Image (cartoon, rainbow, N blue to C red; front, top):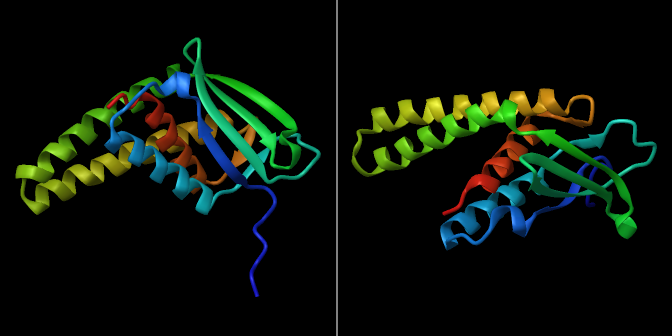
Length: 162
């Protein structure tokens, strides 16, 4: 017997092509994995929405703002579109990319202990960004921490130019 997924979730996520531009195969693969992980397990409820999901989410950038276009799965009925300033996230995203570069460089030459230490820092920054995103969304969209983590990954993906 299959279990019906909860209605207040994302069933589809897309990234705005104009926001991300063209990238290499590795970057495209990372984006696809991030979307897959998000769709596998998420909790997503637009605040004040009298209806139910599941929802689709289109993520983009416009005028240095993060755009979250939320629609219902059935009929693509618009629910809400949020425009969020990226300024509060900018520093943690920048720091996250720096530590990711260190991590990928360390994989080639560092000891397992050094790699583990860098990875712990990387995960810590990822958690910090996720918490910040969850706080920024709290009056707009209810998400659990794991969903916020996966959304933070996708926001970072908008900045991956490969």
